[in-house]
Length: 390
Image (cartoon, rainbow, N blue to C red; front, side, top):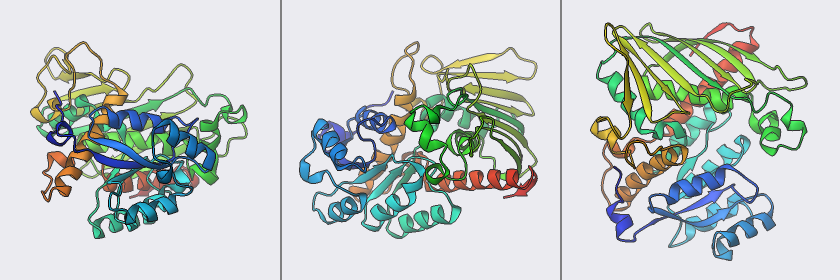
């Protein structure tokens, strides 16, 4: 079970700022609550909205000093970068079109970054951020939340250990219902910006949830995509970005894959599911039942592994927080990412070098992979659903 860090127990918290997440927003509050779970960092500054009134009201509600509630992210990056007590890291929870500019501003002023996915619109932008973070010796995390589940880490270790043998095929899906009707025309703010290419980018469905499929398979299996063939659909009348996608994948080494992501799948809430097939067995995990892993080995009965009851490998077990039968979910998964990131950052501040376990959070390279995946899917679909090389 995860314990409080020595720094947290001693009251030596990191400080962070947030861009986005003002009143009326959804994901910013999720990030703040997730960070608060382990008590390793506290909010000290923010530019929560393009509306100065919203930023001021949000800051007041969160107990921030008015002089650390900024009008623009540029002002915040510059002024925080000069403070003796500057924030240790910034959390970016704005829509997709601003990620690059915001992240670049804070990296340029020596501040570590945590950013929502997709990292940027273009691969070149993502690579520029990675190069800037490396140059300035800064940590950069991308919040692919589902990598924080203990069961996901256990699956990765089981595959690394060869328990199902050489991988042959992957089937992964992520169906949702929420855009089955034109919600963007009925006042739904999330739907409005996600379906607007000026804000969301080249893709809606693949960019929003298909990128989670790519990240989850990459994280669990270590497989590298060699080529893909994607068909991006626009089923709702008048919609200019995809709301459904079917993607065939070939990996280096010979394994194959089939991905499906959809926001028009009536009856489904948040149905991320992964099935991984090897020469000796298969493993299945589903996000809506995240504490359990189903394992099938040739000639043996089905196994169901339970987080909390069954002994996971030490690294995966270290992310489990409460006993079996007490469900851990989305907040805990995101908190695990922040705990790992904060632990690595605390070591750096103390002049220590983080070890491999300290760096087990989705980093900027995963962000680059996600941007490349989105762009390759769009390229394939625009060319008539042809195979394109990575």
